[in-house]
Length: 257
Image (cartoon, helix red, strand yellow):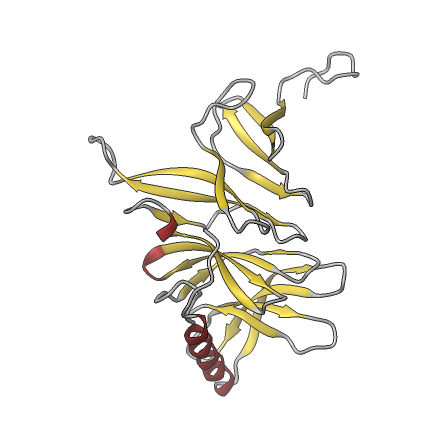
């Protein structure tokens, strides 16, 4: 659920304190691990810092004509009250409004998905473990995600629930695909692994998640051991199957994909 943390000001103070510590240690960029540029020339990037005895990763924003600013740094307080950034995603999503979408693992291996809102200069929590049923965990390390210019976001997460029907492992995990609507502030599940796929088969995960300006989401998934499927979700038509491997290719003499 998209929320504004009431402790954001406190988190910002702690965050600036860490940045001050890094500056005092003569922190430098040690490695740039990913970068995105929008149509206005703004750049968002993830970098590992060399702070002497600490080497945290951070997410940074560079706007034309202005100094580069840090959005999040490992070890600093996050927008989830009481939890620090522990491991920032290796990649991020960036739009033409200079908003930045980034998943992160927090203290105690708790996952969350964040959106830096350029206009409000603040970090929003789009989804955190507290939004799931009690006892569930949220893992975002291998998330696939995208962000459009309206500020809508689509992202996959691995939700783990305590085992309820022994014998089984202590946690039962399932991939879920979420859509966060910037107009309503609602974040909701639009598809999940193990559900029946339109046209046959079972959705097993989410790869290549992409989002257009109308809020439609496209993704790839394996629907059985031999087939991959391509699906689209829209608020108008729901979940639709576009094609699957092995199906005839229209207009090409019956050749198969």
